Amino acid sequence: MKKTVYLLFICALFSVYASGQKPKPPKKPFPPAPEKKVTPAETSKNSSPGGNYVALVRSGKDWGYIDQEGHYAFDRQFENARPFVNGLARVRMTGDWGFIDSEGNYVINPQFENAEDFSEGLARIAKFKKWGYINKTGVIVINPQFHDAEDFQEGVARVRMGTQWGIIEKNGSYVVNPQFHALGPFSDGLARARIGKDWGYIDKSGSWMINPQFDDAEDFNSGLARVKKGTQWGFIDKLGNYIINPQFEAVGNFQEGLARAMKMRQWGYINEKGSWMINPQFDNAGDFSDGFARVRKGKDWGYIGSSGTYTVNPQFSDAEDFNRDVARVRKGTQWGFINKKGLYTITPQFDQANDFIGGLALVRKGVRYGFINDEGKFVVNLIYNDANDFSK
Image 1 (cartoon, helix red, strand yellow):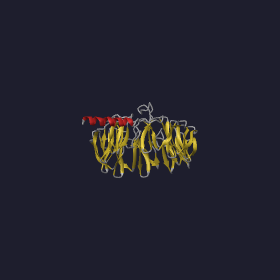
Image 2 (spheres, one colour):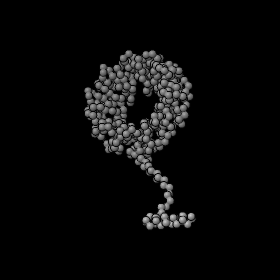
Image 3 (cartoon, rainbow, N blue to C red):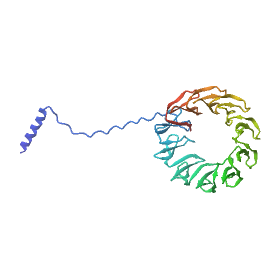
Image 4 (cartoon, rainbow, N blue to C red):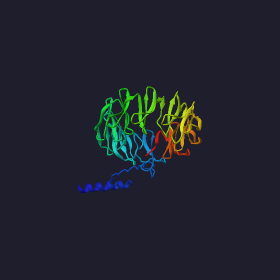
């Protein structure tokens, strides 16, 4: 029997070799698949907003941050995002908001329905449609409980319960219980407040420092506040005394010693005694900025100096304030930039243009956004669906 089996095996082996086939080696396990190489987004070597500016941009549906060379500052992209403020930025992923640092790392993971920027060390956040506050480690220091809330300023914050506003301190305790129908921010230690129809001013304890008596009121600015009695506006000091009696149809804040004011639907400029320094003669006017004010006569905008004489004759369809020696102006539908002599530094060619920040200005042509330098040359091409100014 053994001889028979052995003869059969020898015959089978001979048959295989006779056919030209060789016995197959035993199967080896497949080697693991090579890992896919991930090519990171092009990143500048010096892109941290701690020392440089970054801009928030949207490509398709995703938001990211680019440096001043147009490179992505980091690879991470977001569903929604906001510009950097003091080294932190609000971002949204999977429907929730959190905070990242200048390298794109989460310092506070997305977990809030809404969030605002940090102010005086705390940030407003929303959970279950109620507002509270967190610190910079993400710890909730004031539980979400308010129907609305504002940033901390001068050590206190305005909060709303139902229809009434009150004031809290940083431990969440009420300094002033909700009782005001409207409440402005504190400025120079006072806040405008309204109960019923009349406005007055309170201090941080909620005491009336200037009793409710005005039909409208604005925040204090450099020791003065604009107030309205009937249809006329004037100015008061922090004691509630009229510095300039209500007599104008509209007024702006004092800037560089002058405030715009309107009489008989014409704008001019007054000093802090209420005397006309530039007689009412303009159809529209802006505040003074950098020694110039934009004014409109008829359909055209130009610029005047503090003497009231034109430094740049009316010729533009629209105009904005001077910022670092240049101003944005529009001719027809296109925006450009001029210097203080009224000469174009960049000819009108953009559908939208913003001020220069960090040496670059956001511009739009059609539906695409990019950034130009002060020579009007594109540093970042028109490739984005949306964009914000540079910040850090």
